[in-house]
Each structure stands twice: as C-alpha cells, then as structure tokens.
Image 1 (cartoon, one colour):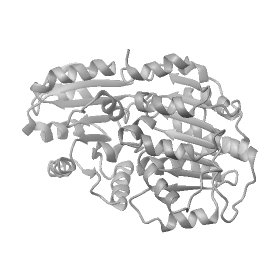
Image 2 (cartoon, rainbow, N blue to C red):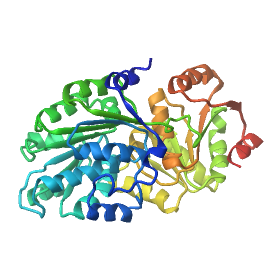
Image 3 (cartoon, rainbow, N blue to C red):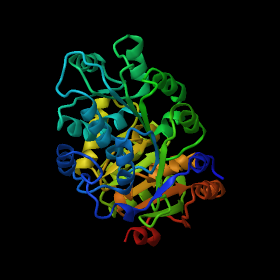
Image 4 (spheres, one colour):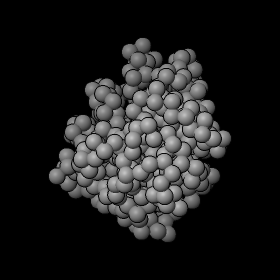
Length: 407
C-alpha cells in the first residue's frame, strides 16, 4: 500500500463525489452574503466537491485534512470559511498593530501570492486584512503592513521564521492555521520549520491541512498537530482521470526542441518542465527561434521578472512557459491545455504536481513526457507508482503521432 494512503485509511477518509455538490450554493454551506457575493465576483458561482465537503466542517471549528490535486478548489475551501470564522470571532476594521489571528503557510512565494489573490478580496469584503510574508524581496513593506494591523498572514516558512526571530511577528494569537501543499513543504526541507511555527500558535487552535499526497513527512505533522480531523479526498480527480490524456514519447535529445515546437504549434497554452535553469532558458530561446513565442521561469530570475513572465503567459503574449519545478510549484495559470515534461520527473509526486497544471476543474488536458529509450523501464515504474496509464511511442520531428495527439 502506498505510504500516503496509510494516513487516510487510519483516519477513515470521506470520499467526496462530484455529484455531492450538485445544486448547492455557498450560502447553503453556511457562508454569509458578502462572502458569497465576492466568491461570485471571483468566478466561483457554485462550490466544487472539496469545498462542499469541507466548508461546513471548518465552520464548526474542527480540524480538517484534505487531499486533492491542484485545481480542485482548495484555496476557497479553506479561505472562505477561515474568513467567516474570523468575522464571527472578532472585530472588523483595521487597528494599528493588531496581531494576526489566522496563518496560511505555503511552500513557495508564488503560491503565497496566488493564495493572497483569492483570499484578500474575500477578506476585504467583510473588513478584514491580509498580508503576504515571503523571501526574495526586502522586508520593509511586509513589516509596515504588520504595523498597520492584519488579520490573516499568508507566509512561506523561511521569511516567517526570520521575522519571528526579529520579534516582528507574534504567533500566539493565531487561532486558525492552514498548511497548503504540505507535502511540498516537506519535500523542500521545511518539516522542522513548520513544526516550530505550529508550536508557537494557539495549542487549542484549529488546523487545516491540504495536500496532494500524504506521505511520511505530512503524517508526522498530522500526528502531532491535528486533533480528530475530518478527512476528505475527492473521487474522480486522480491523475488517471478522463480529463487528462497521458502520453510518453521516446525521443533523441537533439530532437526535443523541434518536437516541443511542433506540440506547441497545435496548443493554445503550454507549460514545459525542465530539470535545470540553463535548459529552461535554452529551450525558451530555441522555441522563439522556431516562431513559437516562449518565456522561462526559474530561480535565477528576480521576483519582478518571474511575475512578468508568468503574466505574459496568462495574457497570451506568449503561449509557452518553460519552468523548473521549484519555480513552477504553486503557480496558477488558467486553461493550460498541454504540459510537456522535457526532462522526465525523478519521482511520481513530481509527475502528479506537474501534470496537475492541466485538466483543472474538469477541463481536458494533455501531458506529454519526453524520455530517452534508456529511461523507459524507470518511467514505467514511475507511472505504475502514480497509478497512471500512458502509452509509449517512439517519435521524431514531423511524425504524425505528434499532430494526431493534439488533433
């Protein structure tokens, strides 16, 4: 049995089917009118299954453990009831120096920013305030926001611990803590920082943990910090679902750029994964040279350039973004119809997170992994571990198999 399933089995997960949310409204789940109106403004007309399952439980104050892949609606699932609970428990309106009462932890600054884009308007609709705390930028604006008073902190562990050590943040008033993409935080080496952070929050507070996978690192957090949680996973949202067509192409390394260019020419919005920053830049330049507008996203770029390049894909000025794993984790781009793994992933969890960029919210998507012939056996083992079926085809630039795949 895969180790991430052990946690769910022991805690008796409730499986949520898509039809369970049919005909429901956010008001039916217990959210107030202002929040429901703001959700509609954000394009959330009705709840997704994970939202329908968890929002009423979160509103009762119970701990929640949720498993669902990227795009299942997790941010609203925890963000909207978190705001509703804070509204019920305390005053609204900004007060100088007011300490935060809720904390949302994310593994990367891109994900922290994405979460804030969803949670901030929900909070502001009822007079509550958020601020983001992450590294890679000067801390002055963040500390200034803290001094003005804030209700919800959205933070990455590294910068948060830095500000705690400077005595600029006090977590003793945190009554609700959310861990988003907890598995990736553990993968990045943040298990111990997360444990230290959680120990500084109210020990009787509510904890909400959302993750695509639940392995040993996440299990450690669950055992120590979650008390009798409600456990949920969404059926029909695995990576082998009908919404995603998985393919493996055996290719020669020298043909990768031409094959990706051919794939991209038949797609509207493409996300390409590479192992290294240098290959990401080389591939983006190579696609540009072949008339396919592309840009890159990796750790050598400063935050302004990363934000700009991501916006270029979102706005359609380019239709290919070439990214490394760490840079791409947590980014949100609507309507990605093709994911290409120019370098195959090292493990099944990376495959799941990469492929989770497409086929979101029931839309169809395609995932193509490029491998050398020598990698076929290892790739088959990875797919089996992930529970994915993907036919393997040997291709060269110009082959009909590439065009036929994308119609």
